[in-house]
Amino acid sequence: MQKLLLIIALTCSHINLGAQTKVMTSFFTKNKAVVITFDACESITPSYFDDSLVQLIERQKLPCTIFLGGKFARRNEQKIRALNLLPYVSFGNHSYSHPEHMERLSKEQMITEITRTDSVIQKYTGKKSVAFRFPAGNYTNKALQVVESLGLKTVHWSFASGDADKNISAFALLEWLKYKTRPGSILIFHINRRGWKTAEVLPKYLSWLKEQGYLVKRLPDVMQ
Ligand SMILES: [Zn+2]
Figure (cartoon, rainbow, N blue to C red):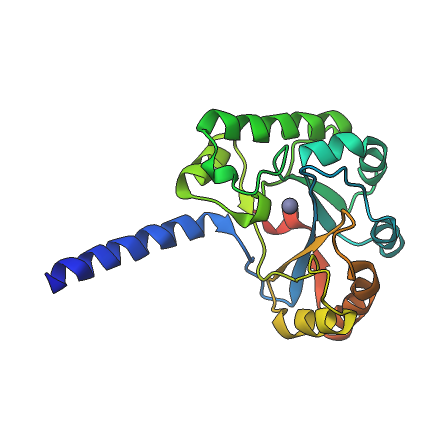
């Protein structure tokens, strides 16, 4: 009986490992480098870009990938078209209506969530999205397979920055980022006005990265 349980446990852990290897949460690098990503989600409440962050991206020529929800993208067409002119900015697909448990939808519904968003991104940028990111990071092996069947790789993050927490202080957010950052980290922030202290903390964090000798790379460049 014990042996059987052990086999089941090993098999299950193997299945979990298999699922995790398909989601990119960091990248291999010999040098000190990180990738910066922003989520631009919209589910029920109309959402807009955090203009301070958009200005920061432009001012610092910050290489970054913005994961766009389809509804968010349609509401913010002009800003997306403007950001698309910056060669260091790329766009990812973050579903259409941002269902918190997209993995519980039917296969057909998941395909619609992804393809509707991809066509909006394609229309505004002339490019296919560089990767997919599940709303709230919730996925199953089956949901991952749906994403992959559409030719997209799933990219999540190395650690939650916590910037969507209304109660986090700027000091705590910065210290947390400094404590958790490693070579190959994929950072996640919110650019839909849900990153309450992000615009205040990000310039300080970018200065710290520079002092520490970190480069900020483009996600498409580390995905090969
Ligand atoms: Zn989101």
